[in-house]
Amino acid sequence: MAPNPDQVKVMKQAVAKAAADRVTSGTVVGLGTGSTTVLAIEYLGQRLQGGGLRDIRGVPTSFQASVLAKRYGIPLVTLDDVERLDLAIDGADEVDPAKNLIKGGGAAHTREKVVDSLADQLIIVVDSSKLVQHLGSSFPVPLEILPMALAPVTRAVERLGGTPELRMGVKKDGPVITDQGNFVLDVKFPQIDDPAGLEQTLNNIPGVLENGIFVALADVVLVGEIQGGEPVVRQF
Ligand code: 5RP
Image (cartoon, rainbow, N blue to C red):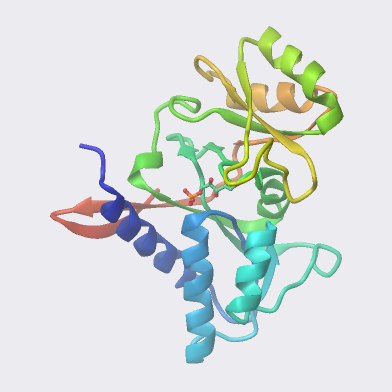
């Protein structure tokens, strides 16, 4: 049975706290985007305020993460200041058994991939509804594209067998505009048998900045589940 919204919320809280608890003093931490990482950033702020955590610096993956970090007192640095990150905490829209991901539900996958790929350890925080056997089962692959390349990229992904849909704004007429000023094309593929190959193929289309397939980047996946009515966190 699919979890109800209250169960999803407690699962997200449990994994967010578990991830935030793994952050140690003096480290550089990638701050992901999405409703689960919002909670992780909040927990990090609480640990800093409580004195149990000191001297961390955050690298935000989006405007959302940057605003939250400032709200919760997490000092920020950029990739000009640091070469590597000790840890990154990020969410995902789908996770397969090999820890490959689809990300970009928040249209932040381009910056997320840059930051997450520089982390010595990437921790993915999801509720159990995100686990799939094959990527693409429930979620389309988001592509961040240059607005002027919308038509040729649309034709190119159709030739690959995908069904593209321009992501539209909510409470905003017209398309979603990313933090970098671009469009997002959500592309549904029948079945993704070769995530690494498709990731490369999509990024080779002129006008595509980055796609939401993340291969071999996640080190740890923390999954929030409900067992006996209580949230538990499982790791794989
Ligand atoms: C943003 C992302 C998010 O991490 C992903 O959409 C998961 O979000 P949520 O925690 O709200 O389910 O990739 O671009």
